[in-house]
Amino acid sequence: MADIDVYKEWLGIPEGDRPPDHYTLLRLVQFEDDVDKIQNNYRKLNAHVRKYATGQYLKQSQDLLNELAKAMLCLTDPDAKREYDASQGRESGGGLDDQPDTVLKFLVGKELIKQAQVEEIQRFAEARGLSDRDAVVQMKLVKSGAATQAYAAELRMPFIDLNDMLPEDDILDMLPKQVVKRHTCLPLFEDRGKVLVACADEPSPDLEDEIRMRYGMPMRAALAVPRSIQQAIARYYAPGERSEPQAAKSTGKNTKTAKPKPTKAKPAADPMSPEEQGKRQQISLIIICWSLIGTIMGLNLSGAMAGNTFGLVGSGLLVAGIVAGVLKLTYWK
Image (cartoon, rainbow, N blue to C red; front, side, top):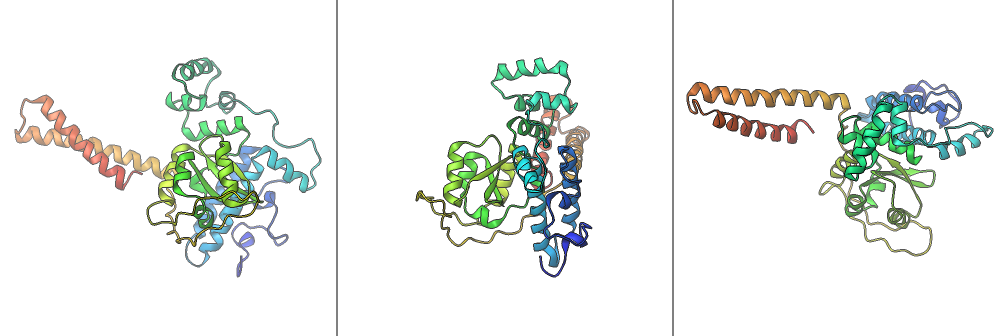
């Protein structure tokens, strides 16, 4: 990163090794094992660096954001962390818990559900053919982000929030839209000889083979909320955003697949934070309610439907539905 030492100027890291090790980069004590602390530090630094993601330092900020993400993903993946810590001189015996939690055990441990609710959740899931992750979301006990994080812990996979990620264009260009839609996945960037791919579920062998053939390297999967992946696909693979690569051909060699010259994607707008999304949802609901009430009152006062209660309510609901659709498309996304 030329012309500016972003580690020192933006993150306050004193002069020394460049790039710094993962723990220094995320402002953690050496060999920190607390996943919550690792993720919290990452989120704070990600939000701070995004302040510089405009103007002359756009490229530097995007590179640093992806570097922070790679460090966080490494330190929250038990196997990757053990390997990295060993390379940093840590003796065996430390690291993240080797015993993966089940989804429900994880949520109980985080005090997001109560132990007394476990049997009810399991019955609900079994009766409807759902996973425990989907069951707690449908029962409105836990939000989808926390449920997916619990599922990641069960599968011993890292969890990522796609709102914090900036996929690299060259990586996106090499995987066609029909593949990402079929597997509900999103390629992000190359990390230590592997392609990091956000997945809605445990990756299938077919997806792993597809990634290896197209990129000439294996994939490393991380779990993300399914809806966030679908939204990212719609954003990054919108019509005209990028060229479709040619079909991959297996050569039996672990070399990168040639790809056509990509069409440069337009920079995507920074996604809204959960707080901003919640605020817009609340405002939208208020507007919808007032459109319903205002329509009923207006028609009643005008005498157009005097005494016709069902007609008044039906007209109000129709107008409220139209308003809700417009807000959904233009304001509450």
